[in-house]
Image: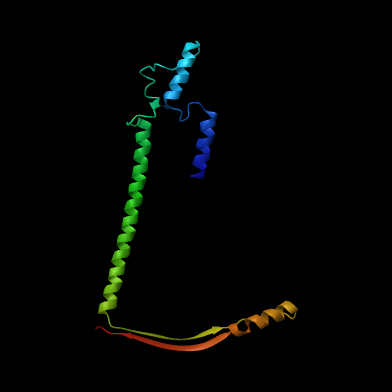
Length: 152
């Protein structure tokens, strides 16, 4: 998106014809002054030029704007459908887990040993300080946990 904006900015300031199709009352006043001073002017537009220019206070869109609008609407609808699908699957999965939770008898048993040993090698002041700080982090524990669920 950043590169598209940078590209648009460069084209807009380097080319008079790039996205320079919108006219307003101020534009037509300048055009009238140019006409009175015998300089080149634009108004009245010829039939083949009318499709190239558009007034800002109009309600209908130009073909280029309809194309951009259609593309943007399509992308929006794809994103909306994808989001709805993700939320739908999330809802179904949550309901499935709730169903299992309410109607299943399960026996969960966890056995094992947790061993965490931290060794600091070295004999300098920083190594001694680090050994002093982390001496209580070393852990060696055996676990045996059982959890039973029953239907109510």
